[in-house]
Image (cartoon, rainbow, N blue to C red; front, side, top):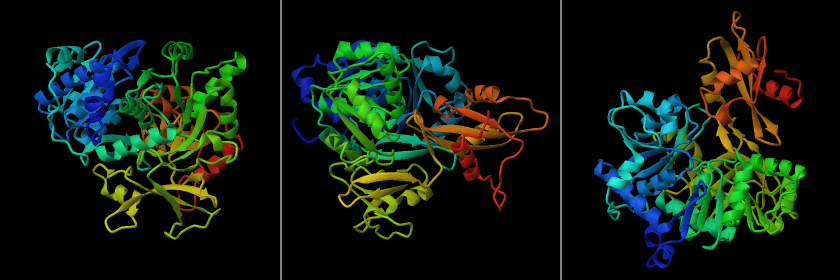
Length: 523
């Protein structure tokens, strides 16, 4: 590198990989390799097109796409134009997408033709929103073809006067208020995080990372960012829906890094019990989003005999908090390790006092990777960002409860809010309840998260129907699928004549959770 990297996209512009070997594969999508030179050319073309359409430094660009080549190009094109990437899960339904577009003030929507039915109803009343669509172009005025735009626009070097303190990403995450909230991350914070991640994961330019997680999920997004940062190769898949195809791609492209969540690892182990799997070329296996059981981590060594297995903990508000050195997996059972390089963690009581070793406290995180705050939500920002060691400094109060042993290793105890972690995704019970109450025939609903070996937590919904309603649990789940992302749809719907209430008239979710834990509920 001719100078230090300060911006996310500078690794693509200044990377030694591009200079020395422009034909090296940057990304493999749907089995097709794309070289670094192709990525830079396509990103510059689309970035120029965005600028030609009035996109300015700091504008938000919504990227509502599957894990495809156009999605990868869109991410780097947005950064080259000086704009802010706003990744949106392609499973997101129209109402939630509309909220995100309005809340963020997005200037452009980059999307896929096969989900046009979700975004087309939103275009009326939003005349300032430009739409560029990959794949089959929907029959609607004003929507431009992704391929046509890229091919028709000559590449032009980035000219946006972006600096490290500018926003790089706005990532929406579920919250206990029911509406998603946008986490603001600067270039400086994300470049620091990349450096810390690749340091403790011991990654290099020769690595080939697999990504089956959505690029809208920060764990998935960072697989791409780390790969380009290193000049490595990313093997990108839409999902883990077709494992046999993914295994074939892993072999074909020599995947060395396998990031996953407990749901994926449980599926792998289940398949392994039926027919042994072995991927000796994989040297790193990483887990976050939900706790990886010690027994599962041990069992994964049979599938990945040459791999270091990393247990980690993080949250969108700072990306990553801690990791456990793979060599300590057996010595520190149940631990998610220590703070990532260049950061600091500590525990405080509810009233802000230090917590002694072995006691439970609320985890606080200090480091350059801490978010600026939530977009347009100073109230929620103040709840999560607390005064730090120095005047004007802020530390992140995770609101999660941990223990820390005398050696500084962290052990997760529980959450202090009711957010559900299912399939590695955050699920707001309030958001699910609000959606379900829009269904005709539902009078009352309560949603809880129940511990589940496969999902981390399973979403359970307790429903009271209107007297004339005859819907069953299966029909309710089917209708929910049209209102929310798949990971938010309740795994179990329990019909009840009434719901337990507290003395002040609120639904008593603790009693429901006890019932679920005792496995007395019936659909």
